[in-house]
Image (cartoon, rainbow, N blue to C red; front, side, top):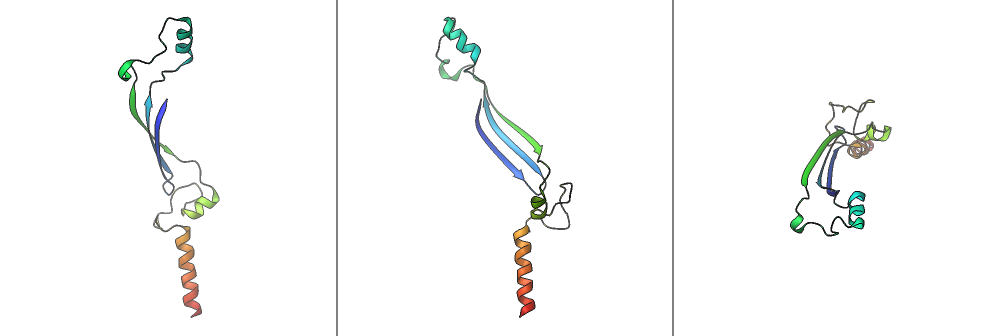
Length: 107
């Protein structure tokens, strides 16, 4: 049972990291059957006893980028970054720089 989930994605390096707090599943089908039979009480243990809570994490590679993502993040065809460009200069910054250069050329 996942209680809290937080993820971070680095589109330029194509990496992802996710954290979540996971509690032990308390309301399961087997437990429900035991409650109906009468061999177990329907109430959870007092003070959250017996419930495991742990912070979990996982790092992963993002899927293969689409053509638009490759253009936006300056990625090669296989998804690796173009190390000749800075990651903070995305597609919008390149378009604005091109427009500024066009304006200077007209003046």
